[in-house]
Image 1 (cartoon, rainbow, N blue to C red):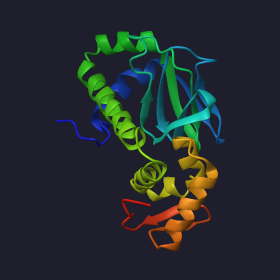
Image 2 (image 1 turned 120 degrees about the vertical axis):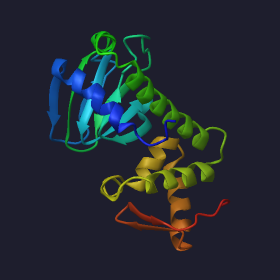
Image 3 (image 1 turned 180 degrees about the vertical axis):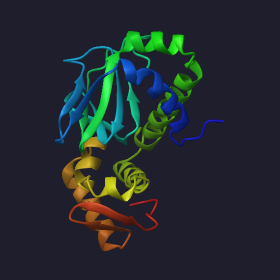
Image 4 (image 1 turned 90 degrees about the horizontal axis):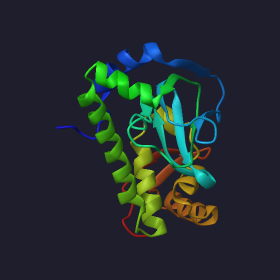
Length: 207
């Protein structure tokens, strides 16, 4: 059974077949647009190295992900009308190819199982995000986001500012986020250094 862990074996098999047909790219700067619904339509994007963010219209942060990662795997089957931007959050490399071509390669190489596993994992991650954010008060959303950040590896946590990430992910006002973070730091529930999250210690369930 597929776990919440990223299906790396399946990614490798997809990458082996897709990479030879892709247009490769490399970004040396942060906050560069890899792809956008305003620029590229119906592309599959494969991230091999680096950290990326997915943002919807009005700069709503859907999430941050570390390589390896695939975006738009199913766009050749169902048109994606969502307005989005995929952006770099570090040095980043990968490739892209038309989603219609991706589907043809998956068919030719009999990679439907691998594609299904990747999409199932991606759907689970989005489902968990919705469970954390939808229908909860501000503190519950901040608490869930802090716990999510602690699951990142240390390198990623030291790159991402806590307040900005929580604000962009939840749309809770900066003043409320700052107030809650200050109270949690004062109570010894979290440790931060230069705006980055260092540790979380038994966050209270209620504010």
